[in-house]
Image 1 (cartoon, rainbow, N blue to C red):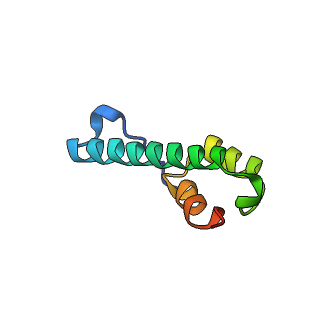
Image 2 (cartoon, rainbow, N blue to C red; image 1 turned 30 degrees about the vertical axis):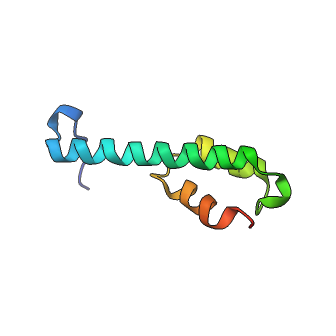
Length: 77
């Protein structure tokens, strides 16, 4: 078995640091947009229970996947 080595922040290249910060910023922006949209919608304009979407958007760390899924498939027109 091989041991998994964890890199520390200081061990990362500047490019890797920028990529991580950029991904985190995009995720935070999408999450904020999706949560605000969810809060402003009536339950009958959401596919699925609002509490489930809110929990997933607020608690799961998904690198932007859950907010995009909500914005694409979780909203009714």
